View: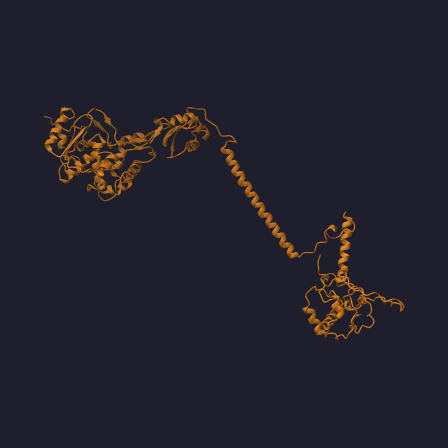
Length: 593
């Protein structure tokens, strides 16, 4: 309920026009400036000066008082003439008012009305003159908006009637009537009477509230849609993982396939990744068919020559057969670039021959790949940068431009799994040399400076290649490296049979005849110092032995039996006796006594 009882009262007959309101306000002001009216004071208190707890709306909340207290004559009603003895009536009070029938005076013989409970006689003392129009307007401006402005007749004697209270009672009666029509008990009040009519709200406030509600609905809708999509996606992915929707098990049936194709499998690829690559190249029909056929069997990465549209089981069988590998080359320690024939009649394919064989493939009747000649030509003529030569070997390689042997020893002995058969000869050599340099660095070869033996990185690589070709046992590598370093230190010719065999047409550990006198850069019987290039592929054990050989005064060594037993000495006479032992065991035949 709205406590502002001034709402809806402009039409009430007790209010009058604007001028009357201003005059009434001035009248109240003058009365408040004078002496307090005991009767009014008694009206607004309990009679003993204590404030009334009921406020100004007190006709219904006036507590009982002493029955013997004097009674106040009832206030006159709005529109009634002033009571007898009223000292003053505001000018123009009757202007603009509706006429009302004159009040009938009580008969003289009638007994006086009993006094109102808690009220004393009305003090009809002097009243201040009315305020000027200027003061009335000022009082009106200072009055709060919608403030309750009782009529001046409230101060007059007679029965008090509160128009605001009347309006409130009227609304309550209407609410009770509506509640009774809606089914509420007749006479119900308060909460039992049902809700009162809702107050009108500001249009601006209602529009803002509607916009806020609309925004909340939009935000909530977006959040709900996002959560539904997120939960649905996670659930779908999980159901696919557990196989709820079923797996794609399609598979081909033609074991012969339809065409040749080269497929590359990258390093560290999972079996599922294998299946995806084969499916993309139309080798198998589905990933699940391939993984099921593989059954967890390990398959190496690299290049494969396969057939398209073959059963998954056929694809697995082809990939586990090394004959279908393309670009896979195994280079053992000590292997040279060129193919060599041994004294026993066996031919050892060189690095160039092995690379050419591994990368040459027949695809649907057309052969592709590189040849030995193309590789040798690229090694002899391409720049060190094109070949991927490391900086510590660039000068030595440049010095032998035109000779394919200038890259000897720069390709490390290992299993090369993925030489791309579609590359050119220069690209293949670049791939092998650049990755070999990384391997050498991992094995401890520095990129600059010298080792503990005062050898540069390239000289260390050359020394290691000689060590690897001279003896068969890795435990002898450090002592052989020390012999080479000691001979270099005293400017003694190395006189290593392995360096002579490097340029020989027939490889023979027992060098004889013209090989001793061959005028080549690699003949250490004729040339002092190290050969111009390594004489084979250098492995990690020989390289580590050459980087830091053990201390010792050895200058000579010789293998004395077929098991590779090697004897070391610093005395030449002892060396000759050791050599005779090798002759006696059939290891050597040249210069035997």
